[in-house]
Structures are given as structure tokens and as C-alpha cells.
Length: 386
Ligand SMILES: Cc1cc2nc3c(=O)[nH]c(=O)nc-3n(C[C@H](O)[C@H](O)[C@H](O)COP(=O)(O)OP(=O)(O)OC[C@H]3O[C@@H](n4cnc5c(N)ncnc54)[C@H](O)[C@@H]3O)c2cc1C
Image 1 (cartoon, rainbow, N blue to C red):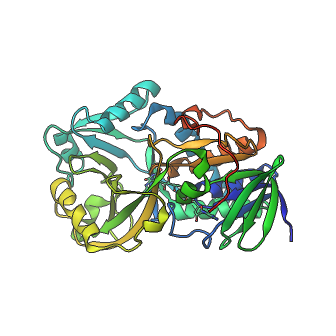
Image 2 (cartoon, rainbow, N blue to C red):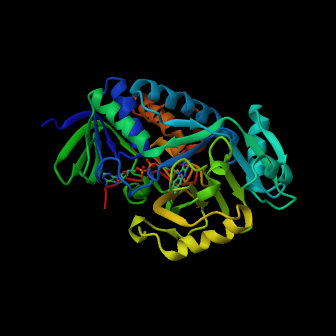
Image 3 (cartoon, helix red, strand yellow):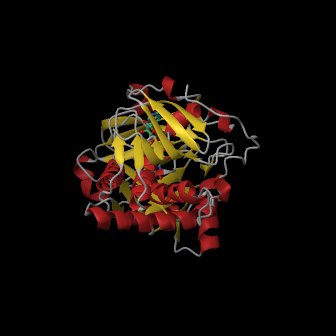
């Protein structure tokens, strides 16, 4: 059995699968190690769909990376012959001058993006299902869509394997060590050596990278589907957009109904911050559904019964921006974590960034704002898994 690799990727979810693919495409001998069966629903990359959008409310600095991500998702579709990305407009909505709407406007201005400003009455005229207060404003952008999240992870893994990568499911990493210029990684099944390590451990990065000095927290988030019954036509994706709303209740977002489960709705943030994934309750409870009702009754009244739900985790950095960098103490280790509930759309581009960092320690992509040391953390010593 081969125990020596050019690069080991620790954690094969959204980001790790993309890194495995790109590294294998560049001819590297790659080992991906995943603690759960491959393409699972116990991390952050499951729940059928993820929004991808260009007018980026969180910061204009994300726009070039999301453009690259679009290109890379389309390339992956061509390579695999699988459908992954569906274009669909995205409505950003909230009170005038609220943080989300202002954030979208900033990206539109800085990158000269095409977007349409709508009043609340124009929103209802265009999309009759919505009832936002009269003073709310909407920004509708067409350069958006949704990704089939599990299909994306599967496509990256399958492509990596077809290019020669080894990807092991059900093999938890117990410890990693920087040894000389390389790394040693110990799992429940053995010890491996590599020149480079890429850590893409999602919510478990809170432990595996504790000595990075970045305080990551975990949020339990629920994805809830509600039936649309006889109103199915109103919620089809040719009639109903993706939407992200900032409201006094909380941020929430949703998708058009794309199958018989109805429309998928979720809150953004607004959940207790946990120190690690251990405290996450993976069952949907009545309170999860009940807490969504006031939002639906107020803004999308008349939605039908709850049909199904799933729990998923956000891994949140202190400023809610990503951490993508070379480990400050170990140049042979790169990290990508803290995707703070908005990372999946970027996975195709992050795979490229991580391959660059593993190959050369740098990348042409602008990742300065994702620096691991921006929180003032100092370099630390060798860190092992707990
Ligand atoms: C409810 C919800 C909705 C979201 N909506 C959107 C959206 O619309 N658009 C968007 O862009 N983003 C969205 N996100 C965020 C996005 O899904 C995440 O940012 C992204 O999936 C994070 O990917 P990741 O690779 O960091 O984590 P994961 O996909 O969880 O991958 C980490 C992997 O590492 C493995 N691992 C950890 N420790 C070990 C170990 N010791 N040994 C082996 N394997 C290990 C884990 O099992 C896991 O598979 C959403 C997230 C959630 C939870």
C-alpha cells in the first residue's frame, strides 16, 4: 500500500474534494482522507442546493473569486457531463440602507455589475408570492443560481479519482505533524507521509487548527422545506427567484420549488455559537419549524405544510470572512476553513487556490483578506489533532 504522497488533503467535503481534483489534474500524487463515508450529510456540504451569486453583500473583494468559481463550475460540468449549476435570479431584499442591501450595492458599484433596484410593490408585482413592507427595497441580479451541492462534491471526488487520486472515506485523521519539510498524518488505519498537507476540515478545523490562533465557532443551522401544493406554478424557478432577506426577525433566504418537497427556506446565522461540532443536535425538532413560521406568514404568506428538514453546520470566523492561507508556522501546510455559512459557491475556485498554495506557497487569486494572521494571532508551534 502506498504511504507516500505529494499532497494529503485532510477532510474531503466541499473544499477538500475541489482541492483533490485540482491537485490530481496538475499531476500530483494526492491522498484525500475523509472521516465519514464520501459525500455525507454530517458536515457543511449537504442539503441539496447552495446559492451562488455575484453581487456579493459580504464584501466586494469576493467578486473576482466568485466569477472564477462560476467558470470552474461550468468547466467541471463539461468535464463530467453532469448538471451542477442552474442559473436563477437572486433577489436581495430588506429595509432601505440595511447592511445586506448596502453590501450588495457596494459590490454592484465597485464591479459595475448588472442589477435592478425594485420597490416593495414592484417586488410583489414581479413575484406575487412576496409581501415585504412598503418601505423595503430589493436588488435583483441575474448573475446568480444554485448548485446541487452533493453532486458538486461527488463530481470533484470522481474526477480526482479518475485522474489518479486516492480518496479514502471512513478514515478519520487522528494526528498530523510537521516533520522536516514534510508532514506525517496518522489515521485510524495507518500513517502516511507527504511533502504538503492541505487542511479542509470544515467544522472540525476548530480542533485540528486550534493553534492557528483563529477562534472558529460552529452554528447548527436548519434547512426546511415547505409544500407549495396548488400554488406550484408561482414558486417555479421561472416565476420565483432565489432570495436573501434581511428582516428584524433574522436574515433568511430561500429557493424556488424545484421538486415535490416544495421550497427550501433557512435562516442565516441567528443560532448559538458552539465551540465545536460535538454539541450539534442532528434532529429537526418542532421548534425549528415553528420558529420559521412567523417569517413565512409575514413575508411569503400561504406557504403549505413542512415537508422535510435537514441540519447542517456553519463554521464561523470572528469577522465572518474565510480563512485561506499557508499555515503561519508550517509552510508545507495550507488551510481553508471558517467559511462562515457562505463558502460553498467558491469551492471550485478554492480548490484552485489550495492547489496553488500547495505547489508554490502563493496564488494569483486575491486572498489577502482571508489571511490566517489577520486576527492578530502569532505564529504557534506544531499542532496535533486532539
Ligand atoms: C444550512 C447551510 C446553508 C448554506 N448555504 C450556502 C449557500 O447557499 N451558498 C454558499 O456558498 N454556501 C452556503 N453554505 C456554506 C457552505 O456550505 C460551507 O461554507 C461549505 O460547505 C464548507 O465546506 P468545507 O469543505 O469547509 O466543510 P465540509 O464540507 O463540512 O468538509 C469538511 C470535511 O472534513 C472532514 N473532516 C473533518 N475532520 C476530519 C478528520 N479528522 N479526518 C478526516 N476527515 C475530517 C469532515 O467530515 C468533512 O467532510 C451553507 C451552509 C449551511 C450549513
